[in-house]
Length: 67
Image (cartoon, rainbow, N blue to C red; front, side, top):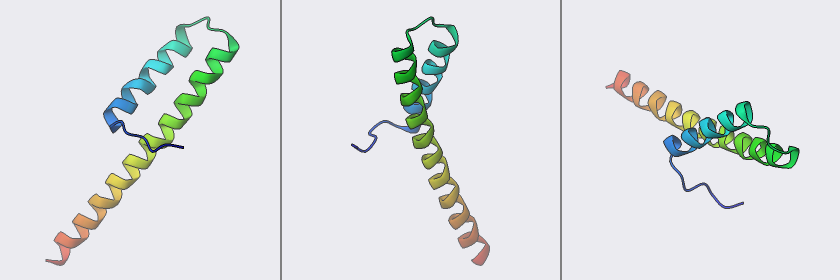
């Protein structure tokens, strides 16, 4: 699978769009499943980005405490 090229903010915005579509749409099952699948991938990407940011903050905080 190709690596995600969008930013965290872009992924989050698309995820919000998907949620709105799924909540308000009478879309066919196939389309709903495709949106759900895209949404789960976006959640993974956002979670990964947040985990990486948290790790960086932890490292920086520990470095500052040691100085």
